[in-house]
Length: 321
Image 1 (cartoon, rainbow, N blue to C red):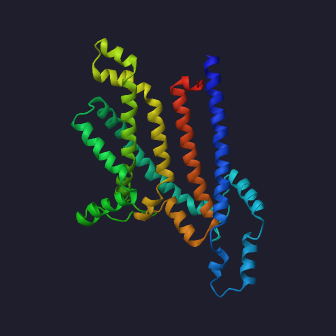
Image 2: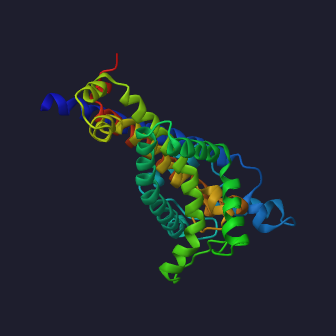
Image 3: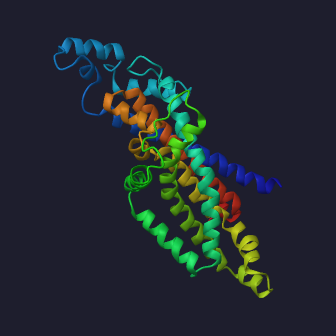
């Protein structure tokens, strides 16, 4: 037991260490990129007629006159404790993006709850009836969906359901105090767009993973023993394809959190992506950094989870040749 547990535990700890190192490196890139954004928040707030002395005084007040390395070290130390600092608007960054993060997580959770089982089920169906009508239709549809940019999908969905059919509101402007049913109605179009985007990736990868496993000798042996094809797929192929499927699911879940900026902007959905766009427009550096760090942490975290699940589901990966 210990011989099996120890290498897996060591692998998990090493992956966690690499994940934290990656997050630190990404935080450095984020801080550097934001620091080199053109323009000055102080100058933008004070207006074009502001004197250099007034701009310099406001920059001192905001701490923007300190050396770059000192500002990065201070920001990283406070962020590590969960304190994301103060927005240039005078509010804590947590208060600015907290409600927005809750909205993004709600949108992602509802989409994932629909997309993951649907994609796995359809992927299994495509692999089970490879080359038949259902496989050809879904393969063609998903290929077309992957080939189209997500903002185009969003506008097409909006045009059909909001403009032509007038069944749903085109804007997803939910707010506090709104009934959950009304919020859900306003979220249908963003959810549908995200479904069309990530469902294609997960379905195609699930199909490919199962078909790859079904070419294995032990699957052929199960067929020679006379087991029904459905049982071969569910009991032989699917358990051994969990690793690749988990990887693609985790990557798409990361996209749901870190890649929804375009969708939120198109539908004016009050999520973290929209908050980041507003912060860039207002040059609110602490909010920009916090949003980017949240996106990076989500992406690294889900990819780390996919890596761990892949190795745990296939212990042979612990000893690569």
